[in-house]
Length: 571
Image 1 (cartoon, one colour):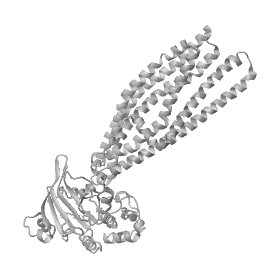
Image 2 (cartoon, rainbow, N blue to C red):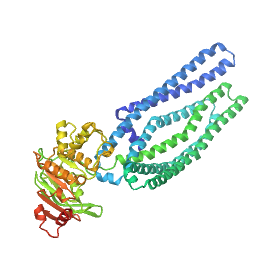
Image 3 (tube, helix red, strand yellow):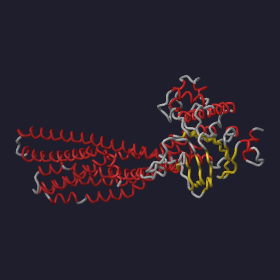
Image 4 (cartoon, rainbow, N blue to C red):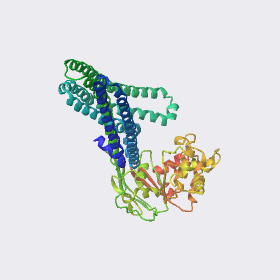
């Protein structure tokens, strides 16, 4: 199943693999001709001492050898081209599948596991298609040709030699059954090890801040030791049966010489026939020696193939509908109707009803974990509702084309992520064709221009991975500028100014209010100062709306969350 599935990724380049196999077949045919030349030299030239015919025969043998080398070279080249085509298409489609997966998929799968499947496991597919597959074909042909030749000369000799080949097959099959699950366990553990490494690289500042280097090193050593043990276990299975298979091949060579010598002495075969048999020893020995390696690599491929297929066949739970009902022009009216969201048995949002007219600004506040971010994830359809519906311009977001829906939403996220690229590229990420004037204008509104312009290379400054080298407030301002540069009809700001000072926050709010084109804005915040100018403020507690109204209205509620928070923050 894995082989047929992997083969499909060669698309129109399958002919290259077919050509490679054909060249291998031709190479094996050429190599089977050489032993007959050696038999002819022994029986018809050396024995009668007709040395004048020796040079032409040797030149013919050299020519055939050269032909074999040419076939082997071009067979390897075409197999490499075919396998690289398959791997290229496989990686492209795997990455495309990952890009279409919902946020829930990434919450359920470890980063190290996904990286390992897209790199190490895919390379195992390349190795199998490029080297293992042609070798299996070549090995089978060698044995078939050897069997035909041996039977045509002396059936008894053939039966004696081939009588021990089932022993090699037994060892190979037994090894295959035991080594496959062992390699699968080792691949799983490698994914876990990669996850530990990835987490430590990403969170190195936290590790250092809490002086947990020794703890993380011990954790790594534990996972590394487990991977080492599983690798040893898997390789010991191969090491146990590999020498047995090799011993059968060596014994076959000795048996070949012993039986052939006796038959020459008895006159059953000529000395030339013995030369032929001994020349064909490679056709018996090489498959026997390679059998262990090929079985080992085949089991590795099957283990890797299963993991890649599980990733490739994983359902994409959030996709564009077959019929796109999204409006031509987006105004930005947003409505949540009796929205309920559950993760398993945990209810995150319960019966949320909310109307946000186009161009209005809405603030959302509430305790940590009350479901604020989950609510805006429903608007962008990062997550789907369990019950109810989210509507933009009167159309359920499930009936929107996903690309169009998200293209019309500018968003800043609680966990700010910046790419290792220039400041300009990070700001213009959603609109790469945006002119520099738009980038600078967005940066000024977000109060990012004030520090970007002081950098040595200005907007061409390379931002470190995930924004390394920038403060939390600077990263938030670049993130806000990125959202503003889209000039989308819907703007979602999730805890955007939590890391900036009050003066900067007031400046940003003033600039947002003065924008010529007012987008429908949803502001999620912990500070009342971030939402007090909003047209409507919703308070969410335990997944439900507990309060709603303007700043003035909410301040009239003596026991309300908003009033108490506002008094606490301004005391």
